[in-house]
Image (cartoon, rainbow, N blue to C red; front, side):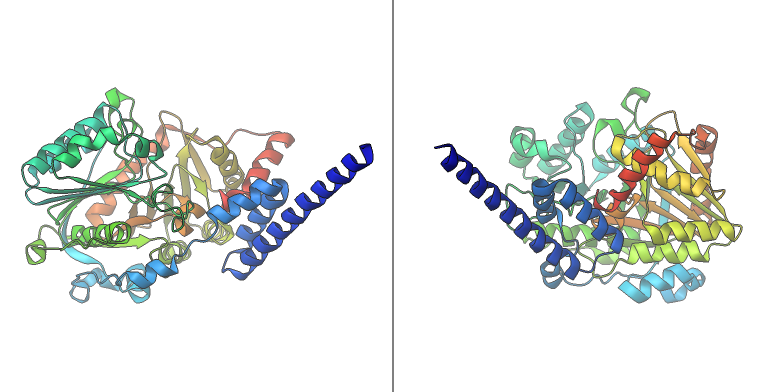
Length: 466
């Protein structure tokens, strides 16, 4: 009897080991045949071997970053532009993006930067109240606090007045909302449409949990847009003075129409419904002097143009590179580009929060920052509140703002959208927004012991897979 039990246990162990080896071989075969960076391959191999069964399952769920079927279904972006007539059209970065993706800068826009979250809140509510025809919203997180409910009430009211309102929410960023349909009951009854982007419950065979819609945009009447890093949740806005520090901007003009085209692509992919972009001619009215290039990135774009444009900008920088981001985990190419820029005499600065909302990301970030600090790069840890802003300044020629963090997830996996601003006045406005952060931050990381360094480097190895 004992012999039979031992034999059964041995057979069971052999079966488990066989399944594990088969799963690893299948995963590694798929991993090595895909177009992935060596750091990403190594990170996933470590995950698979350190967490045998769970690691394989995680890889099968999260693997892949370009959606070929999606690219085949969607029409290419064809942005309306007046690029050739503008003198700043000679910008090397602008020309590079146009050459790769045929996405051109547009002039005649009005650009306005929100100085703080209270101003962003006031401007957003005003935009919604003034909407005449359409309100299209894409957000990663939609909260359930008083602010979010206020937004939903105003959207419901506008829908009742005959305004077309569509709300696109990421299914993982706001996963709990899938189980709380009552929140949108009145909104839907009024005629408003709400859709969860790539929900694992609605379409488990097509969904890739690793590819999330991180784009944040509120588009009103096709020619006005609010974008940046802010989600529609109370902690991102004033919240009685306790809100996070973020950067939001408002655009009126052709560039807002480009945001509308991006939203229409995402909405069609998820619902199969085409958004008819009416009154396009009216949207081409000159509303300002700002030159802006709107660049989407992610699984619905054939190339990694945002990542490549940042590399080009960093290698071409002459005077300064200022980076503000809540999560800092660049790959080797970006790290080398920043170090080379510093060696060339460029003023390289990185501003991140002292403590973000993700401990493991902070731990991995510290390893990257220590490497930069060892070469003289100034690293600032913002200590007052959670810093959630995403902004990059390159010399006095380019300012980049939007939804993407300075990490591999934003550059290679998430659906993101960034605005490249080339007008001097807009660059100065963003510069003035960033400068106070330096005085409210700690300069440099605290010295760490050997154990702390080992922990940081351990998490750094997994950064491409996070």
